[in-house]
Amino acid sequence: MFVNKKKEPNRLFHYLWKYKHLYFIGIVILLIVDYLNLYLPQFTGEITDGLASHTIDSEEIGSIILKMLACAAALSLGRFAYRYFVIGTSRKIEHALQNDIFAKLETLSQRFYNENKTGDLMAYFTNDLDAIREAIGWSIISAFDAIVLTIMCLYRMMTYVSVTLTLYTILPMIGVGIYGYNIFKAFDKHFEMRQESFAKLSDVVQESISAERVIKAFVQEDEQLENFKKANESNRQINMKVVRLRAYAWPVMEIFIGVAFVIAILFGGYYCLIGEITLGKMVTFSSYVGTLVWPMLAFGDCITTFTLGYAGMKRINNAFNEIPEIVDSEHPDGVTELKGEIKFENVDFKYREDFPYALEDINVEIKQGETFAIMGRTGAGKTTMVNLMTRLFDVTDGSISFDGHNIKQIPLKVLRENIAYVPQDNFLFSETLKQNISFGKLDATLDEIIEACKVADVHDNIADFPLKYETMVGERGVTLSGGQKQRASIARAILKDSPILIMDDSLSAVDTDTEDNILHNLKQIRQGKTTIMIAHRVSTVQSADHIIVLDNGKMIEYGTYDELVALNGQFARMVRKQQLEKQLAQAN
Image 1 (cartoon, rainbow, N blue to C red):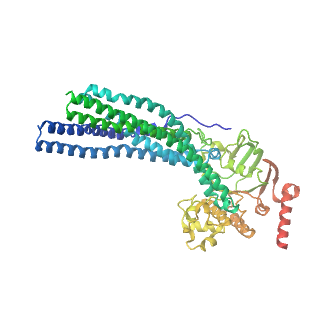
Image 2 (image 1 turned 90 degrees about the vertical axis):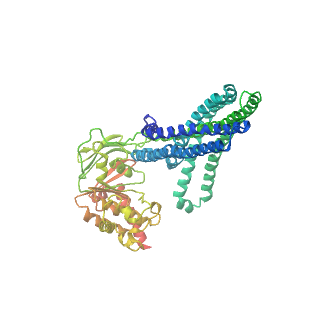
Image 3 (image 1 turned 90 degrees about the horizontal axis):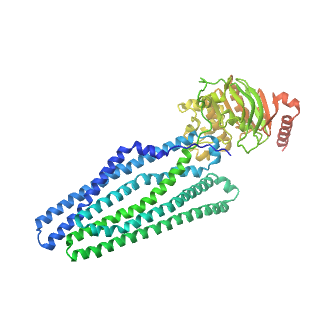
């Protein structure tokens, strides 16, 4: 099994440092808000003492109320401001992380996607990033607010009311700290399990939707529903564990809060009765205890949110720590374009160390301007050869060269820009036909697109659509027939007009007349350019300059069409079999 990771510092710290000035402004405003928040209980206490001692008149009450209103207005503006700077910045970091994750995923090699499910990767952009945003946004506010407001509040309680009474009241907070530390460890474990469970559920949904037509064709709706129910039930159970853990956490927090209130009322009332403090200060002290409720609750919420964000960031860091296997050489050759001469020398390849060889001892030379065909039974290694040419994978042993340059010394951008590729799966995006066909040449004019479609013998089909080239093809081209998707993919590659064209079994879904038209058109426009064709039908490769036949990853035959027929080997047997099938079809 390939292990291909590196250890990088947490990417999140980079962004927190980048936007530190915005966080600083937000935190300063938060401190001011917390400081102003201490005056409201004091104003209430002053009015209470004045009324109790009959030393305050309506004018003084009005003056204090105006101060309270001004303080409340300042608090409202301040709360908006610190949310803007802190939570707004968390959105910026979320946006940047989304871009970075996507950019990172685009650099990773094909092996990474073979070994990771789509649902896991999609979870990065949903649950994981949501958790991170909450942790670096609202939770930072809550954490600072809890710490600062608690300290300020306790200071005011000690200096303005009573040190002894304050010490009695803060005893329950020691329990909050001890309990919070232990609950943090439990949350960490359960939240990571929750993220993984969500990723598995997402993968089941994504696969079921993508494979809808296959599911219906094989009448497997009930089976898929059962698979979804199992994944959904697993997700529900782990979420219920989190809910239960959170449900245990809050009541315990509230018990500590209740105890603090009881202490404040009992001891505060006693001190008030013996004259240690005034009634107004008793009211003020009770308000301060009420003010401390929020920090104590916020403390528990911060533990929950920070833990969830930490679990999400660990998962995302796994992607950032992946090392792309296919990268440019540190000292590449100064190649800017390719002519199309390709050479395989003693090439061996296996997809994984514990897998058998997919290709073994391949030696072949493709000359510039040649039409080269690759044939063989399913699993013989045909597509693997193409994957090595496009450098989706690197050879295990041996070498591949283009125009005399080792493929590993050619910049990836140069290599792939000079190759037009029609893959087996004929993937089309959920866009218009025009956008799909111009994917490899974004500045193509409509006339150029039409010309490419004529070569691919699909223009007449498109012209029959009501919206013609503006027709939306649906997800993965679902609104088109197999032959139309195949020919649209061929048109996309033709429009790119690269020195090297690779067609991986790209004519399998068209009839023989259409195939003849496309091959004739290709011969006209591809003169002097290299064309590589993988095929199962011998009619597709009949006019190829050279043909290679693979079997179990080994080259067993090589030559022209006539030479291979004369060999009376595997290729000749394929020719006779397909000729017989054609005769039987015509007879019927």
